[in-house]
Length: 333
Image (tube, rainbow, N blue to C red):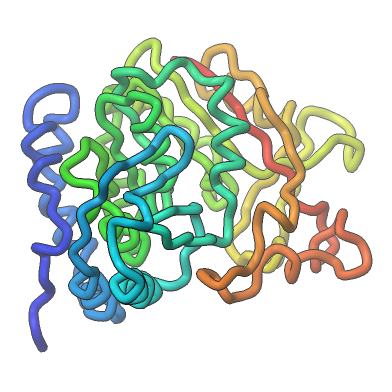
């Protein structure tokens, strides 16, 4: 069996940058964590993903915009034939769930309009300028690029999905050595009580965790004193059951997702955050997920939110649960 080509994804700049300082303890164990995470024993499709990266055409972007979106280059930076080769290589990493992205006139219309979520989140944050930022469960890193666009000093995303890591590095291939990386690890691999990051994001992760209190403590312990947590998750509205303890625990699937454990009311989650030692927790945004924000596209042609709702009542999931409502919470340490 041929060996994996680790040169396609290179963490050397990151490891050098964090070898000393608040992330020093993590830097010592990261190489072993990465080697274990990116292996053919773990990912049977690894060679296909690596082939997609190898097939990326060489194009030099004339500009990069991370402030208004994630835009790399302009249409005039390559010809139509090269752009078609680019599309074919990137399609080798289908499905593309988080985005959208613009590359040299190619529009990657992802399943999620992650830019809409970012627009809801960004007005409520402490400025990211010069901050050390961690994005937990970042997917292919869309929001990591937006965080860098807001002036963060360094952004580290973590996500255990091998395909998402390759999607991120397909984009970074054209970005150059910017201080943003996505690591193929989960929060369990972050050293306990690290207390290093200025801002920690957990968006779309909380309801997948079997122990919500443990996740809140893990997030808290990643933050330096005075740092800020940004938590975005599914919630339920009041009125189903009265009281702070209201929480939906789906016995089967929720919106066709298998691994959904806890959907609390806003008041319930605020109480949990206070119990875990987070200061001044507050809900800063709440919105029902629409079929315009999450849907199937050319770049994600599997089923999506329209297929997960009750066809006769879009206020309910296919299983009869309340339809997805997402809330953003902010707190400090």
